[in-house]
Amino acid sequence: MKIVACNSNRPLAEAVAAALNLPLTKASVRRFADMEVFVEIHENIRGEDVFIIQSTSYPANDNLMELLIACDALRRASARRVTAVIPYFGYARQDRKSGPRTPISAKLVANLITEAGANRVLTVDLHAGQIQGFFDIPVDNLYAAPLFTRDIEQRYAGRDLMIVSPDVGGVLRARAIATRLKLDLAIIDKRREQAGVSEVMNIIGDVRGRDCLLVDDIVDSGGTLVNAASALIAGGAKSASVYVTHGVLSGGAVARVASSNIEMLTVTDTILATEAMRLADNVRQISIAPLLAEAMRRISDESSVSSLFD
Image 1 (tube, rainbow, N blue to C red):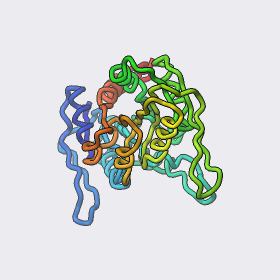
Image 2: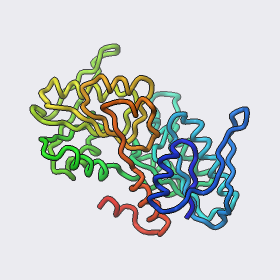
Image 3: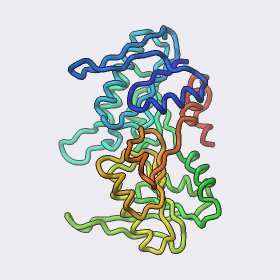
C-alpha cells in the first residue's frame, strides 16, 4: 500500500499517512515555467496498491489536473490499482442540466478521472448521491455524520439541542445525525417570491429556547447559513451553530460568518484551511483523517467499508 500526496491538502495527507503508520511516497508535483503540471514518482510502485490524496478545491482546475496527471503517472508506472482519494469532489454541484444548453460537469470530471487511470474513487459526502452513478468504476462515498455525532456529544453535552436542515434538500443528511443523537429535527423552508427580492425563510418545527445545530454538506459564500441562523434566532432559538463537511468559504464568507449570529461553524479538513479561517473566533476544523485512513485500510484489505457506518 502506497500513499501519494498532491498539493491541494498536504496536511490532511500527512495525517492520513500517520494514522496508517506509513510514510508518504516520494513524489514531485510541480509546475513548469508556463504553469504546466508535472508529476514524477521517485519510488518503485510496480504492482502496488496506490492511493492518491487530492481534493479538487480552489484552485479547482489546477488541483484537478494534478490528480489526473498523477493517475496517469501511476498507471504508466504499473501500479496494480490506483484509488483516487478525493475528500472534496469539486464540480459536484453541477450534477444536472440547470437550464438549456448547460453542461453536466460532474459527469465530465468523472469521465476524466476514469480515463486518466483511476481504478476506484474514495470521497466524502458527495453533494448529490447520484454522482456515484456517473463513474464506471467503484465509488466509496464516506459520511461525516459519525464524526459530527461524536463531536456534538462532547462539545454540546447538557444543552437542549435540536438539529436543523437549512433547506428541504438536506433533510436526509440532517435526519441521519438527529437519529443518531435521538434529537428533534427542524427544517427551514426558503423561497424567493420574485427575482430581486430576498428569500423568505419559514421554520418547520418549534425552535423556541433550543440550541440549534444546522447541518449541511457545503458552505461556500455562507449566505444561506447566515440567513438561516438569523431566522432561527428570530424564531426564538437560544443559539445557532453549524456543522458542515466541506468548508469552501470563498470570497468574504469567513468575514460574513464571523459577523453573524452563528455561535460556531465547525467544518472538516477535507479542504485546507485558509488564514482567515484560522484567525476567525467562530470557525473551527475537525479532522476527517482517521475516517479516511480506516476506509483506505479496508479497501486495501478488501474488507467492508460500509460497515464503518453501521
